Image 1 (cartoon, rainbow, N blue to C red):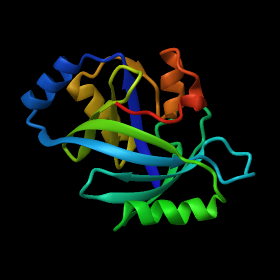
Image 2 (image 1 turned 135 degrees about the vertical axis):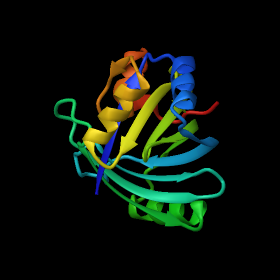
Image 3 (image 1 turned 180 degrees about the vertical axis):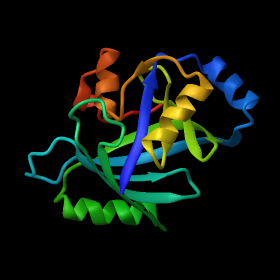
Image 4 (image 1 turned 60 degrees about the vertical axis):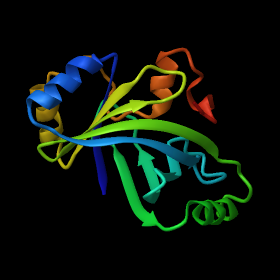
Length: 180
């Protein structure tokens, strides 16, 4: 399955929230997420493949992602995601497969809205200013939502987080553990 998503940094949060309310987007709420990120399979040599286990305390998912970072495409990520019942047991299984490789432990906060079937998430991570992710089923609907909501800022395509962190003086792939 393709993840079709655009990330926009240096945007105006207040203006976006106002546009979402004005256009009658459905507010889905705020959540604090805990995640473990396992980079590429050991010895694969691929630096943009990962396994992620993520939970908001109610729903836990296990996700495999592979991102082709050529260009600024917003449909450059293959993703398989499944819901799992136990965060710690899923982490234990992946740790066994990764033969002791230590995952990154990360915390994030999301404010999520639904706008005409497109998910708009204001993402807050440690060390960088908030950014927005707009995800939908097609590139056309994602770009339409960005335009209709008037989201302005720097379009990062569907780039990996390391590029966003690097923009703000962080060391790309070495972002590692992140906590509030």
